[in-house]
Length: 286
Image (cartoon, rainbow, N blue to C red; front, side):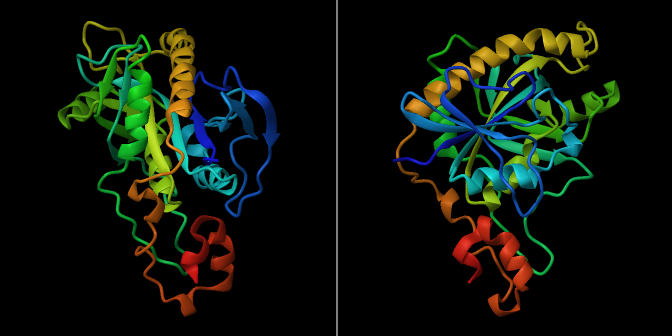
């Protein structure tokens, strides 16, 4: 039986429709408390584990998220693949609200976040040139192609600190970097998923044009919320189709990301660090 598919629900997606035998699971991770309980259930005979990124009721700012706990919790529940559903702003003329973008690159412009499980006596450097799992992204792409959405395959996701939206000057600066979409959460998730040897792919659901587009008003929460419902229904459909299409076994390199990444001499790794990292790195610490 294949491992469960993990789904991180972003703004507007706080649950999964069609989930059978749903059960709330609280996970006590070495990195603290995740955003909420994980919802584990079955769709079409296959297991899915869902987490509302900002908590049900949308209680947590992007900077307040315990990214390490969220990713560790998925790992501890046996998840090998993660699909992140995220509301984003468009930085390109051809990316319109309600479009779906499948980024393959990230720029991390955050300033106040912990983006690694390692440290405190253990040094690891994972490869991150290609931050999105090509295999998983391909499955999501195939699933999205059967849904009535405008799909864009590839692109760069710029992750900013927030919680404020961009100034006009910032928005024009970011546009000069040739990024495609802008959001506030996915860079840390992608980094940590790689360290946890999990596949990761983003389904970026466009809600607005940020504030760079002169013939559009500045982005507002009201404008975004008005589009979240349609985005959420499309996301649920794509996730359900993705789940049905997943191969039983992974053939990508994500599952061996730590094989040569831990540089610290094993005899010098503190016992506390080994205990903390065991759910993430397993026997690679021995």
